[in-house]
Length: 383
Image 1 (cartoon, one colour):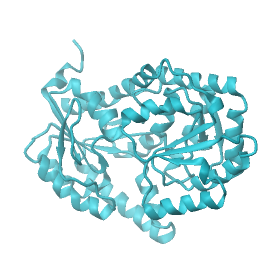
Image 2 (image 1 turned 120 degrees about the vertical axis):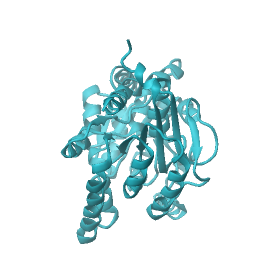
Image 3 (image 1 turned 90 degrees about the horizontal axis):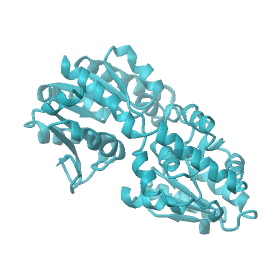
Image 4 (image 1 turned 120 degrees about the horizontal axis):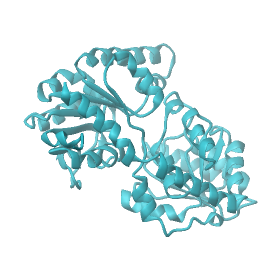
């Protein structure tokens, strides 16, 4: 008997205030993949529309931007799910820590999905120093208090698993791997053309590295006159967008920049075949030190060679499979050197991409990783 067969008796609701209804991790990496194993799977988020394979519950039309707005929105989420009586409530935002008792009264088991190093992010976003220290400690206090009512933990990197073992709770490592097999199958007959010199930067466009990237492109202009960078994703706000665009204009390379904005997942995957390499240029923040970003593996699944920051987890992937180059993301010359390292050896660059694709088939894929989450659910429901 399949050990997961007993899960068909149960229901799960994933809840979020901070993420879109079709969020890559919440919907594509978790809810959609666990749906065949459960009686019912819900995603409660903001927005309108439908989700294949799961039931979507909207608590409001617009996703709140500020943390204060997200805390206020928790009330709407709780009102939306209170009559479901789910066996598992799986929450994805630290704002729910403040309402953990209310969640406890609705669901049988509570799971906290920790997407990043929140206390480190709060420290840096508060400006560091005494103010940052106090913000970090305040979060850690609320987290410690809430953990008494939380049954299980999910997180994204081995370092964060170690960080949360102190709570003595069942914990699952669910890294941000894509549905690699589907991406590979979709792009199987596509061939990456390094000679196009088209660079792709996708995801949240908040990284400070977009500034030295402009200078790197300027440094390479004489060698690669047709070099371009496409940005896919959203800027933090219009002010930040204008600042970055202004910097690229002053650097004399704005004509090399193409901003597409947010794309549907289907269109994004189909577009990957148009590029020569993928850029993952995280700034070296505390959170980035332990990050293992989804877009890295999406690029690799599409046979794109990659450029990553000299940070532990991302460096390890590139060195292990020889699928790209490593750079200092705060240094324009280092970024330029990494780009040239790939573009100047076209045949080897294609091999880098193929090695990356093979690694996603063997190791870095959501289809295998999801069993870590199913095992956690099984453990909790047996108690």
